[in-house]
Image (cartoon, rainbow, N blue to C red):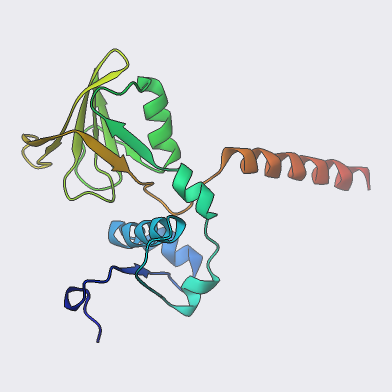
Length: 185
């Protein structure tokens, strides 16, 4: 069996369930993380070994452009509208909670946003001063204590079901037109 640590070549695994209902009900953060990293690596043309199953090959996935656009880059000193960040995190599939405990969650307290990106080992705490990111640091989710200051972080989506707003609006318009046509007949 191939083991990742035996090679310096990056490996990416795209796990997929046989039945989509089973995946929705049981999809683990580890599987979601693997799928997002797989799609992100493909979208950015990274070299490596890409592994999936037949059901993974049949699965509908977002277009590479949508995967690339679905990232959020946060950097100390950068400006980011606070409410826009919250909306963006929701759109990327992050769950808003009172206290961040696991990957795919975020919490808001005053001008502080905690997020646990799927592509990070530790959650991130962001302090805002108005619309400027004042600080970024990792923290321990159990104790809530800071671990290390960081300058920049890339947040990947928390789901591989990335919805492009333009395409969503086009789909809604098409469905409304088809419904209107069906009602005429």
